[in-house]
Length: 247
Image (cartoon, rainbow, N blue to C red; front, side, top):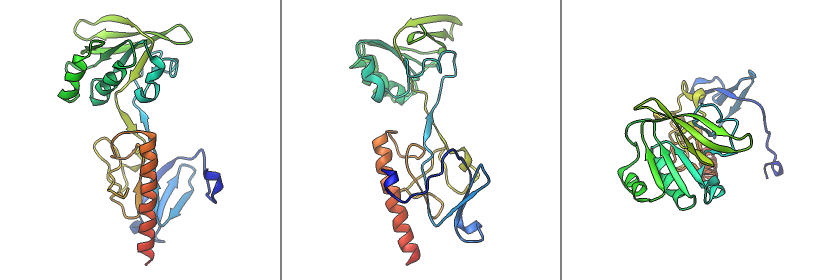
């Protein structure tokens, strides 16, 4: 679809710095790339995306997409009738457990802290489901597999330091997303406490002429279809900005 339009595409490059038009000699927004090149524009749309926060334990990378998953909505149906675990007791983790409970045989939620961080209404719902178990003070230590797929998960009981093992087929990691906005922290683009780009109703940011869309923004629900809509909205916002600026 993109190739149908006259758009220059730069690949294998990473943005390192953004400068607002008020701080450049030519009055344009500058984006400096890691190569040293600088892109200049009257308006910019940022969509750097976000990455799943990982457990960083042995076996996680080896069995990624072989039992280790990060999106219960996407991959949940693949584990129909099987035993699974959800790592993380925040809203995302408990919501994932509730969703999975209607598909899989059993869900075990593992939370590092001594209490769940999810909203009480979600906790109550999860506790009411017969095929959901919740274990607190649990530190995941290893993903175990047979070379082709996940077969179990090991965790440390932080109360006793005992290592325990759960036989299962799927592990859903729900310990948050990390927005790819580290390079914006010294810019004038306002970021939330989580590092997400703060946006208005038109995708506008705190820096004039700069818009943003996708999983790196404060817009809730990190789903492709939502990011697509936000991208369209940010594009229209930037277009409207340029018309008014030129007028």
